[in-house]
Each structure stands twice: as C-alpha cells, then as structure tokens.
Image (cartoon, rainbow, N blue to C red; front, side):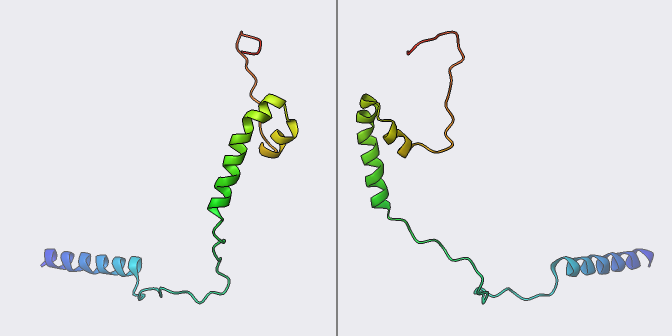
Amino acid sequence: MKRFLSVVTLSLVAALFAFAQFGCAGPQPATSTNTNMATPAPTPDKAAIERELLRIENDFARVLKEHDGEAIRRVEADDIAEIIRTDARQGGD
C-alpha cells in the first residue's frame, strides 16, 4: 500500500511539474500584428557592386605604379591598421 501511494504521489508531482514547465497555452499565431516590426533592407544591386569591385581591382596596378595616394584613400577603410614588420630584415623586400 505504501508503495502504491508513493507511485501515485510521484506521478502527481511529475504531472504538476510538467504542466508548470510546458503550460497549457495554445500554439502562437504564425503572423504578427505588431506594427513596430523591423522591415528587411532593400536588396543591393549585386551587379553594380561586382562592376565596382572589378574596376577597383583592375585599376589597382596603375594606382600602385603611379603612387596615387588619393585613389588608395578612396578604397581603404578609415580605420585601417598599418602592419609594420618587426623582424631583423630591413628594407623594401
């Protein structure tokens, strides 16, 4: 009898715990009526981006040859970090 009472008590506790964890709420609606939802940004023109990158890449040899600092400033980021070699070799190699 004690064993039966223990099993029933444990079953009730487990059931109460399960209801407390999962609740009795129904499924959430698939669509939202929130008017403050973020809207996706417009899709960028991928072809225009690719053309600009190819133009920069193809023009880079001329920029390096002519030491065109203004063209480099247009391309590189404002916060670019320069890498300084700290090994024993010095010079332009």
